[in-house]
Length: 234
Image (cartoon, rainbow, N blue to C red; front, side, top):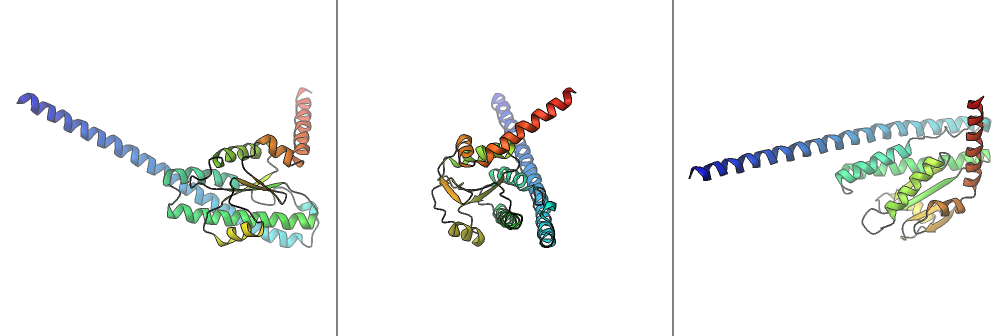
């Protein structure tokens, strides 16, 4: 009888310890999820201010020389927001109402950035390189995650390239209009590069082949790296 009593104590103690561990893990997970969400909102607000500033700057540049327009004219933090948003979405789930709201706003910021770049390129006769990427995270696009990694590498190797990523199924009228205007079919992943649309997975080699400007950028990076190395040796 005493032996059974001791066993019950062990079971109760084990149950309490298990509950405490579970509660600690849950609390920690929620804490970091909320922290990342706060970071996402902070970056989102900064980008909104950057793009408003860019619009105002463009209005000023309409009567000014294009020599004042540089790669820093538009917001450079969209990719940072996307990365944090993706992590938070995985934690909280794709159907989380707050995440969906932020994704809509983020997508609007991307479209705004994309249109501003087109305006500036038309005025200043420049040819910026941009990739518009359409994906799905509803389980019907096995290559989308892999394509995301490829585009992350492109961003890292070619900082001058603007990459815009859109959830094809997001309920956002502006995005649906963008999809309709460019006749993007639901064959994902889909990439729009210089008005040409490519369906299916594209590796780095394919992207470098489909974007001739990347060769020039690569040559420029190599030349710059060589010059920097020579300068250090002196």
